[in-house]
Image 1 (cartoon, rainbow, N blue to C red):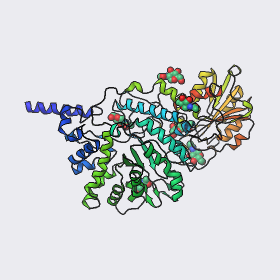
Image 2: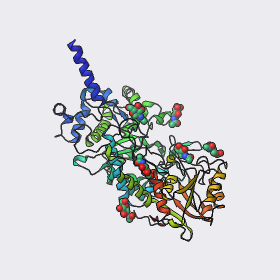
Image 3: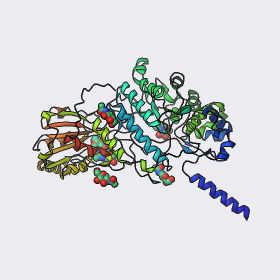
Length: 574
Ligand SMILES: *[C@@H]1O[C@H](CO)[C@@H](O)[C@H](O)[C@H]1NC(C)=O
Ligand SMILES: *[C@@H]1O[C@H](CO)[C@@H](O)[C@H](O)[C@H]1NC(C)=O
Ligand SMILES: *[C@@H]1O[C@H](CO)[C@@H](O)[C@H](O)[C@H]1NC(C)=O
Ligand SMILES: *[C@@H]1O[C@H](CO)[C@@H](O)[C@H](O)[C@H]1NC(C)=O
Ligand SMILES: *[C@@H]1O[C@H](CO)[C@@H](O)[C@H](O)[C@H]1NC(C)=O
Ligand SMILES: *[C@@H]1O[C@H](CO)[C@@H](O)[C@H](O)[C@H]1NC(C)=O
């Protein structure tokens, strides 16, 4: 009876420990003395090696997935390596969870292509620092991890690319500068033995800028890159991200480069350690190992795929492929246990540098550090600094507040909170759409969508837009792209505005009292030469994907509270 009761208590204790967010094996005095990996007087490499030496083969294999298994007998909790933070905390990875816990939203900063257009390194670093603060606040409640798979520092060379919006554009020097500011702002200052508060990841290594386009797919694409293009274009951001910014993670891409899958390119992966001094972990993109055999038929068996990536230097597999097939790779003699030990050493080293196993420090951040007024203002600042005025006939902007009584805001995205963030957006704190933001400025603001959605396949709703435009003093048409046109796993097929959007703009332009203002959304380039030459379109303002404060900032710009300047042809000194 007593024994049964004790067992029950022990079970209850174990359940409570498992449920506690961020359980820490080395937090108590007992465990710290019991295990060398908890001994803070040892170096981090010594602690990492000590932990590896305690594990059985099965326990080791369970560490090779982003959803890493725990080791209950040592008090090591399971860990989710995959959290996302491209331009704010995002729930694309399982590590960030907005639906359970006190934190229900996080600041949605503008998509990276817009912040980049500020050409302001202090701004980039400040935004990364704010995202890191929110990540730590959300981590404190167990709703987010400490390892993030951002920034995306690929070169936006192909204008069709659905993920170009996530990057800092086509210039390798700008992408390198952005990577430096993001990683330093996010990881924080290097402490003793390379301690960091959070881990950032340089992705996706390398020569990746296509998703899915007319039968081609990123999963099987073979990028042909000359040695010169490699050095001039694709390597610089990664070199800076590793060597100067000292990122603690690198992600290998799905695609092949010159006939070899990137996660199997031992030469390119090893180079980061041998020449750039990389000391972090290398993760695959999600399921990038499984496809090496199944889809690229580069190897002849799953076990061969595992051997080739572990020998190339990859440490972690996003997905469950290594968990499922590594045992058999060992049994078939394709790899040795020390190939796994090497990977685990890198993984545990990063966890130790993050202090994941150690006692919490007292001055940690919490939910009150997420969605702060300060972060909202920084997000607004990023939109103001990044906005680009492409056309402004006869100084049409700024508008004079005293002369504007009635504004019409027209376009399918003009009152759509879901069109503001671009991809890798989580749950924003409080989105202001363009319509709502304008209404706060000019009480008599009307809205008409003009098209059912951004694809704009019909003219059915044009009539309503025409009526709204006729009645207003000033007409603002919000046009451009959305994730329905460009996103992960989906490239564009045309550089023109989608569907009948051009038709909508021209129809509205023909009935307005004054020339209209065209606001363009999207990450990829859009050919609007028709608008450039049309005198009925006075001004064109590019706003990328402005995030949750876009609608607040638009009227500030239109009414001259903030002057976006003329950045076309701006000198690109970072
Ligand atoms: C968030 O966590 C809850 C509770 O653990 C779970 O039910 C839900 O599926 C998680 N959501 C996501 C998006 O992972
Ligand atoms: C760059 O951004 C920072 C942070 O928002 C700001 O304080 C600074 O004025 C900006 N610099 C320029 C040249 O606009
Ligand atoms: C890879 O091939 C498998 C098996 O044919 C298929 O089920 C899967 O959809 C393919 N994956 C990709 C990403 O193409
Ligand atoms: C959201 O922002 C609007 C201004 O755009 C403000 O009026 C409102 O109070 C805010 N709501 C919350 C819940 O913060
Ligand atoms: C924009 O894309 C999002 C995500 O696909 C979708 O939910 C939303 O309805 C789209 N908005 C418009 C106006 O097309
Ligand atoms: C709009 O038309 C295009 C081209 O005909 C088509 O690919 C797309 O699926 C349509 N979109 C919607 C939302 O109907």
